[in-house]
Image 1 (cartoon, helix red, strand yellow):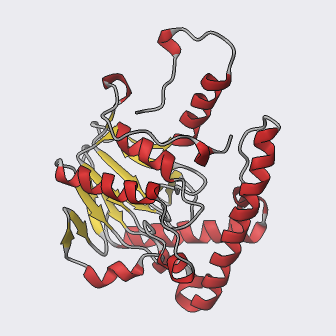
Image 2 (tube, rainbow, N blue to C red):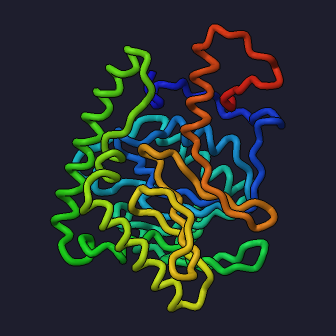
Length: 286
């Protein structure tokens, strides 16, 4: 069973035991408008999480893909509606556009349905650390110096995801878990590893020059929390393959949440013939 085959649930409030209460959430690289977007799992996460501030750190809507071919299923519309509903109910929602939704940079400083659109911003954690929030594409040499090459790379990435979906359909029929081809290539190809390292170092250097303690970004679809020369570097990952978000707990502690682990637990509980006791039962949010 592929992760995007999980049924979408009605927009009811989750059980109290399932609610994830945190101070701040960062998500990016949703790529709504593409077949690769894991909208069902994203919607399940948004139903569970409650936070004071939600940062949308770029590439929320994939304008590049939508210009090539329109793709907008109901699940993608449900995600947008859920984000707007959170804003109406009191969550501060901040949108920092990325390169794929650069069209939104025309509206910096505006508020749409309770969502603030900003170029960048500073977030102060509960324990007093200042974090610079940026999508990160300004530190991608390919984007800045050879945008045509970025478009080619985007096309190749979409092709890889398409191949990966068919491959994982076969794996699912064999009872094998989901496996990411693009993540494997990123980790194994030396140039890709070098690119990620150079990007992280460049973003951390800029954060240091701004006099902040850390930075939160997206763009490269690689979730990470680590120190780079005294600067806290945080990348919240993506919702195409990784299904990750960055969370700030009430005490200021930062954590990367891997939603795919919850999906795996759900699938295991659903398919297992072993009787599970109520104390250890996992249920997807309704």
